[in-house]
Length: 489
Ligand code: FAD
Ligand code: SF4
Image 1 (spheres, protein in one colour):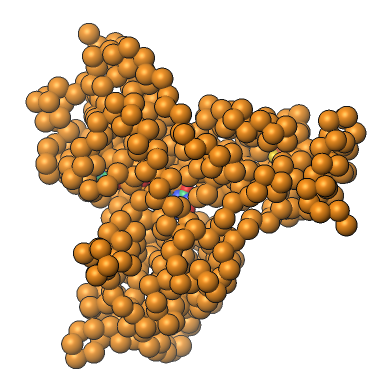
Image 2: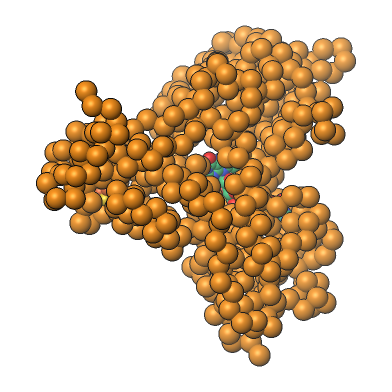
């Protein structure tokens, strides 16, 4: 068989002469993502997925049928013109491919890595439908990442003439970054206020380096700075200053609230205050933002040196925590989830990677208490076995405990990763803001809150959601803020 370079050349020649039939495209094998070996990567925090080569990317792009109605676009929350950018990859015009993506998405290197494409664009892909298998869809995310990673100089968006209008963006997550970029482009004076000492939101403090290298996020932040966006770090809105003060005393004309959903939920079971129990947020923040894996070698933040870790939960956050614990040297990492693997909300790819790295999945089990030793340190989990009953409100089958099935699992660390909710600080210090019963900010279709000149989006509005949804709301809010500013003298 010809090597992949020759195979590509043959397909490209056929494509150019208009002789590449849909059946030829469907017979091109899916191009797997090159990855670090599972055994090696347990020992390092480097990125797991290594990215396509040019040959792999063009072969994958040739699998696209260039459907007239492009159903993939419907599945993209920000409406990227997927068919068109894939065609540019086939033609080898990567700069044009990137320009097409950037019309709708400002952070393609991030989204290409972390978007749940299998339930968005790739789920709708005609190729997936033909094979009745979503894992055989055109790998849209990997192609997006391919072109984004080729963009070495980043390109600084043009900034319009100064308008003299000032906007405060609270939070530097993906939503805040999009709002700041879009409004600065239109010539407004933008300041981002961020509580942490580093900007980037969950992309920096939550999602680990091995899934999303921090240098990629930093590059986007550098672009903001070059555009003239000011960033005030260690500034907790609601403590350092309130929204009202920013507007009335500091003279900001409009405010965007993009503070995310950073308050971890706990199980409220006995033993959650023992030494060795972490929220996934704390564990991941220590490891990612504070670089605790380098404790004593240049970083000041310690983290538990664990032998046996139990992570509670079945979402992406739980997978990230479990895979981080593996890399921090734990000998045994359990993932405890009360439903079956089928109901797990985590991405299939993350589950697959966690298993490859040796995480031991304990499904249909849930802790009833955490047991401590005489020094109040975790020594075991008491678990209860579960079975699945009828579907609940979420549509997933309800986990039902099996009476008398308790047993103990010896662990020294427990990481609770069962969800995050809105931090109440902004709501408590801004009484004019309307909140829903979960503490999320209520907005209209333009992301406008109940307070004049104040807009909000991302996880603080949607509850813990996704990067792309936060970006989508950021774009909507920026357009609405721009309109609002035009009405002010
Ligand atoms: P965030 O990213 O949450 O950023 C909010 C920022 O506001 C933070 O920097 C915070 O410090 C700051 N802030 C908070 N309060 C204040 C205040 N009072 N004053 C000033 N600043 C404040 N999504 C995906 O699409 N794919 C994934 O694979 C994925 N994995 C995830 C893994 C983990 C561990 C976590 C926690 C989340 C994951 N998500 C994932 C979800 C995704 O990261 C979020 O939906 C997204 O980051 C929300 O963006 P945002 O702009 O609303 O705010
Ligand atoms: Fe290509 Fe799939 Fe989109 Fe059709 S649905 S244009 S095959 S990516």
